Length: 312
Length: 267
Ligand SMILES: Nc1ncnc2c1ncn2[C@@H]1O[C@H](COP(=O)(O)OP(=O)(O)O)[C@@H](O)[C@H]1O
Ligand SMILES: [Mg+2]
Image 1 (tube, chains in turn orange, red):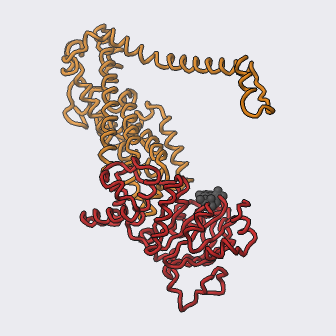
Image 2 (cartoon, chains in turn purple, orange):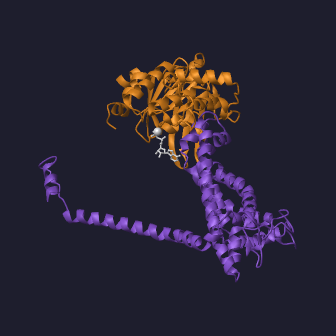
């Protein structure tokens, strides 16, 4: 083979380079096979996503209009007429309330873990954190019920409400934000913090003016993934908020419950009404659209923040 | 004071001890059970350049970091002995670590500018010490960039990100950042390790020039460099200070066989 001859001609003519032709042939085949497997895995992984989008769109398309997202549900069974405004507004309430709890708590503990804590204590906290992520959301729901919603015994007696539901979702979101914030800070080169400390910065100064800024992109991703996770939750809401077909009059007590797109899908699918099934699919498209916009929006904000922070 | 220090090569006594910037006394340092630095004793004279030499892993960086207490953050590290800066033990309880680090600047092995603008990198050391006067900050930043020989190259892009600079420029930016707090000591840990020969030469010239303001302690693996710029040279091996002497003697008449082996490249 021509290749083998080339090997012989190069370099020191006395230093023969033994060429294993069959191995070279095989390694190229292995490379193709690995490539094929990776591509197959990607297609299998991506298929459900495209299938969900496609089928939801095909089934729900006739309800996808401005009216659908700008009016409250009416008719009988409720939702047969009108749109899903209650659920969109409700999600806004829930995400804001959950974030009020989870963003400061999660970022705070993430920073603490990566910068201040001692190794032994940290590994325990990290383990607890991972355990919390593994707790089924229905268990969080039951816990949320006893802490926030029940009107008997101890607890806050918020009733089935946005506050009870939002805080419960906040508990689910916190360990996610914590874990991802810690990882984001972990990716920052140690030399940044050393550079700041060596100039006489305190750990807090180094954290707030160098580390947080450098990790900003990752921290935004942490918040984003936390929010995306809770937007899809239904089980915790079953016990703490349930569902409201109208607009809330407050965030606690009677009238404090809100709608929620995931709950709406869950409820509509269980109704023996074809129209509601179609509307549930349309709501899936709306939910996916919000997830998409949120993702793009957060990336944009994160990019802008990084750009702006570079100047200070 | 003088008897315990076998490296008292300048005959420092009670009478002339104000020529001394830093005195290291019986310094021992361990990472957990790993006893790294063993009984280090030496003086650093004011406005001198001293090079610390030694094979990699012998404890040069660790030693340097005991001089501004950067090892405080290494979990499980233990230190005994004293480091006297202007006669005061930096490990005594009353010492303010923030003020210590303002006074003892540090430049790291690989350039580590912050992900900020060139201007903000230099201004950082001023702001964290509570300086708010804009005029003062602008003037100081400009002055330090000039000292670091960088001003002409960056004066039109002070508000660009520091990462847009070349490696050599970034390192000079880090030097400007370190001198912005007006320290009296500069610690440099292989500051030219990742730079090309031209950038290295620029920084070595700077160091030679800086002697009039600062006491400079520089870790190096490059014997030629050490000989060129330093007044004193110390040789570390396995955490021990094998030899410490004036650079002239160090390179021409080493007292210890191991030093001789090292400077003739037998490590
Ligand atoms: N944080 C640390 N924890 C434990 N051992 C360390 C740590 N830093 C350095 N060492 C060890 O101390 C020895 C000296 O390291 P260092 O001071 O960096 O040497 P040098 O700068 O001379 O190459 C090495 O064996 C290294 O593995
Ligand atoms: Mg080193």
